Length: 149
Image (cartoon, rainbow, N blue to C red; front, side, top):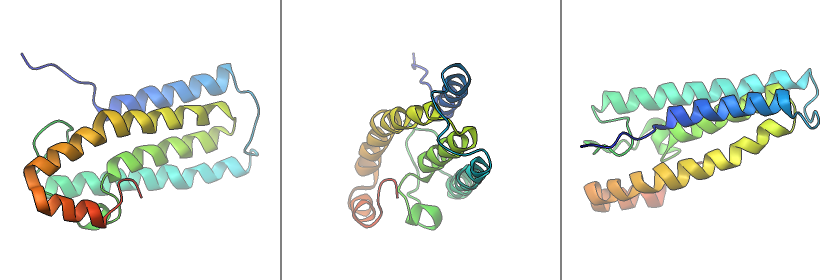
């Protein structure tokens, strides 16, 4: 029987809920002035845009967007020419944008653990699978494009 895994969008949702809870229950101090907090829309919008573009690129290549499933194609152009994992980068930008918009210190605390979970729990596994599947082509791509940015 195949074990169901929690997928990255669920982790993103949990991180957002944790950020909002920390902001309202334990705000500590405002580090982004109220007017400046509107700038959080920029990383939020960029993150959403990167997500959509990366998802569309994988779908156009007719390969999976789900972690732990075997890829049928290696996408290396577009946003994948800038970051090997633009979908995770998009998630982090979304979290940064939300934290800036909230303006207090505590929401920012969630971002680093989220990055670590994505990196250790998903990216490292995906990269091993891609290396096994695509070999030299993957290694050349890996050498040319950074993991995050």
